[in-house]
Length: 287
Image 1 (cartoon, rainbow, N blue to C red):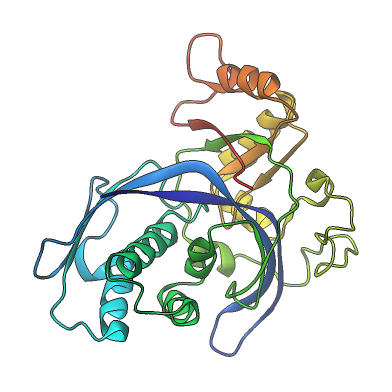
Image 2: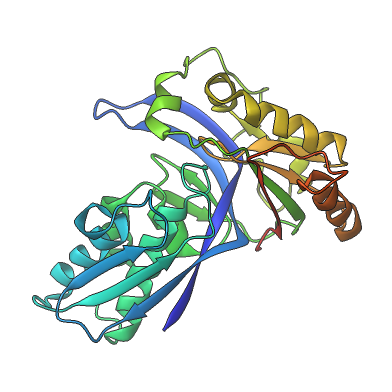
């Protein structure tokens, strides 16, 4: 079977502290987007195999999708079962778009469906948390306000969809490096009641709340990402932001025509204002 594993953007991300185990506490609003990897999944195999067409992605036990499959079979009481997963990468790597976590969630969901749903939602969530901080969000598969390390989710159902332009500036960023560069207490958002700003009775014009505490350290490590953000604003984005720990930035557009014009302007074709090495994507929020 073929499965789509969608990327995400963070419309809001604030770091609220650091835990003794090294993880950071955060508040973030995440939304799935149309850009996706394609997973070819087969159950006609005696063991667990994960391969990928991208040379920078680990295969076998080092891949988060492999970890998810192992933990599913353990929890479902199916020792010796197997699955073959071939990942066709469209989501850039080291981009802040959650591609690996999305792959893992897609594998978990597919395995549970294929074997007659032996695991309840709560158990799948537990496995997702153990596999990676963003995996529970992708398992949910809809916009959500996430707290804790990203594992406590509150679905958000009233966002308006926007056309999006994504720019991956050609330089991956490791999450650990961005967090190492973060100066807690120096990157503060305006006084926004973080846990209530996205309630249905509030203004849902999300451009007003775009914020990412990881932008300053990410831009320090990857100046082309800051250039890309500025270019999105110039081409008519109503708001632009780094996604996650980067290095991808996205622009929200009011309508398809403005977004389409921006996409062509930002391409690397003659007359375009894109930069060599940029990957530019035209997609939209999935709400």
